Image 1: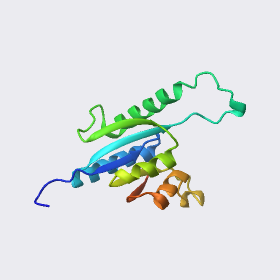
Image 2: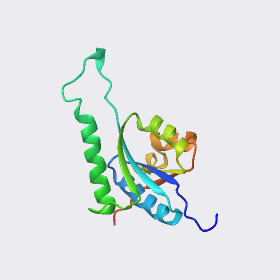
Image 3: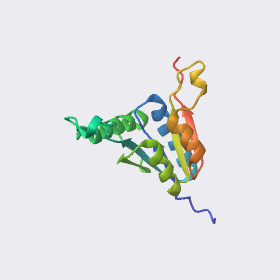
Image 4: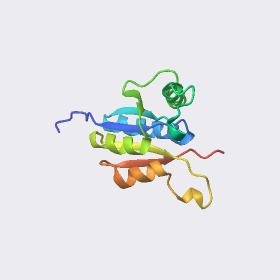
Length: 147
């Protein structure tokens, strides 16, 4: 590899949780060491509606996901986004979309929102599905513990 930096891609699923913000930070640490790009992605989808009726205000879901992504990036990195980070808002279910996106990624980094006790021993549905089915390595990180 003649000393050239990698141009890999790390995908980070962002949902606004403290765990996903920590996932952004951990991905940045890894990306610097690996010379990789980070793609921070917030997924959204229309909720299931009964009998095909569409509720008012449904167009706001994409905008809401974009707002969550922007706030999460600011919490993780401050007002200036690192040069190697791009963000996207994607319509789709996070679990299936991340597994599909893993085909073109070198790694996926996700936060795990544990609830403590016995429930905290389990991975969430998105992270466990990605660990089981992704086409690249998956790193699942915990939210930082509060002191």
